[in-house]
Image 1: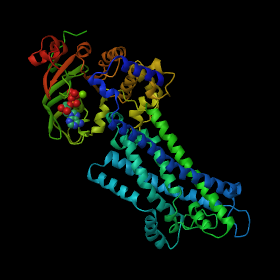
Image 2: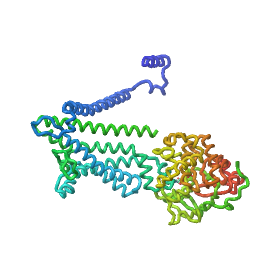
Image 3: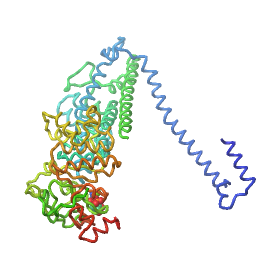
Length: 309
Length: 262
Ligand SMILES: Nc1ncnc2c1ncn2[C@@H]1O[C@H](COP(=O)(O)OP(=O)(O)O)[C@@H](O)[C@H]1O
Ligand SMILES: [Mg+2]
C-alpha cells in the first residue's frame, strides 16, 4: 500500500508537472512539516500522560493485592479482631459495620437524593430548582471531614455518644449530591414524548414523574446509586467523629460501630506486624468492593446505551 | 371515498364547540379568535402549512397546551355542556375523555404490550377484573390482536412502527374516551402501515369523534368527513372535506389545496 502510493506519486510527478493550483497538495513546505511534527508530538504527549495516569493506579492495585491477599481467609470475614500477640482473628466487626453504615446511608440518602433529582428535573421551575442545584453543587464540594464535624455537633453531642446512626447520616449527606445530580441528568434524557403520552392519558403529573419518567430512567439511576455508594464506602474522615469504632460486633444503631476505613487507619498506624497485615487485607477488600461497584455501574450504563438504540 | 352528501358542520350535532379561542406562547399569539364546531362521530381533518397552529389547536382541546411553560389560553371550548376551561373542570379527568395520539409512536418502553394497553387504567389506580378481556377487545379493535396475542408480555417497543402506533391507539381506547385527537399519526409510518391505520380510523369514527392533524392533503381527502384549513394562526375555513377540496369559499384555501403554497 505504501509502496503503491509512492510509485503513483513519483509517476505523476515525473510525467505531468503539477499545476499551480495543485502544488500545495504535493510539496510539504517548512510550516507544514512543523505542523506534522507538532501533531506527532501532541499524540505522543497524550500517550505518555495516559501511562503516567495508569502507572500509579496499576501499582497501587498490585501493591495492595501483593500485601493484602496473603491475609485473606474466611476468618477475616467471620472472626473478631484478636488482641495484640494473639494470632488469627479477623475484621468481621468492620465488614459488618461498613455494610451497616452503607445501609443506613442508602436508606436516608437514596430517597432524598432521588426525590431531589425528580423535583429539580420534573417539578421545580426556575428559582427554587436553581437554588437546590446550587446547594447540591456546594455540598458535593464540602470536604467530608467538615460534614463529619457538622454531624458530630448536631447528632453526637446531643445523643452523648458516637453511633452507627450518626455515621450513616454523615455518609448520606456525602452521597445525596451525587445521587441527586445523576437522577436529574438521567430524567432529562427521558424523551418528552413519554411524558406527554402519559399526561394525555389523564395520568396526574406526579404519577407521570414517578411511574413513567423515573421508571424509564431507573437503570441509569442505578448506575448513579452504585457510584454514590462506591464514593462513601471508603470515606474515613467523617466516621472518626460519628461512628467512631468498636472492637465488637455491633448491630445497634445508637452505639459506636466499626468500619473498614477506620479499622484500616487504626491498624495501619499501629506498631504491630499482624495488625498492619490486617490493615492491608482490609484495604484489599475495600478496593475490591469499590471496584466491583464501579464495574456494576459501568455495565449498567452500557446496557442502557445499548437498549436505547 | 369522499362523501358528497354531508351537511355543513354547523348543521350537525357538535361534539366540541370552540368559541373565540386564543392561544399564546408567552407573548406570541399562536391562535387568533378561533370559532368552530367539531361534528360528533365524524373525522375532522386539520390542514395548513407548517407552523400555522394545527398542533396548538389540537392541544387546546385536551388542555395539553397549558403544560408548556408560559402558555396561555382564552375563550371557550364547550364539551358536554361545559366549558373545559371552567374552573370546576379537572384537566386530568378531561384528558381521559379526550385521548391523544402523537406523531411518533410512543409506547412506554418499560412496559409489555399488555401493560401498555392497560397503562391508562393501572396508572390511575384502576385494576379492572376483566383486564384480559379489555386487552383482547381493545387490541382487536385496532386490528393488532392476531399479531401480538402470543407475545403480550414482550416489550411494546419490540413492535414495528405501524404496530406501535396501533398499540398507542389501543392504549387510548382502553380509557374509553369520546374524542380522540390525532397529531399527524401516520407521518412516521410507511404507506402500508398508513393505509391500515386509515382503515382503522374509518371504523373508529362510528363510535368516536376524531380530530386529525395531517400535513398530507391526499390523506385528508381520503379519510376525513370535514376539513379545517388553518393559516398563520387563523381558522380560514371549516367545511365538508368535499367542499374544501373542490369548491372552497375562500381563495386562500383553494390556493393551498391546489398546492400553490405550503
Ligand atoms: N413550545 C413552544 N414554544 C413557543 N412557541 C411555540 C411552541 N410550540 C409551537 N410554537 C409556535 O406556535 C406556532 C404554531 O405551532 P404549531 O401549532 O406547532 O404548528 P403546526 O402544528 O401547524 O405545525 C408556531 O409559530 C410555533 O413556532
Ligand atoms: Mg404540528
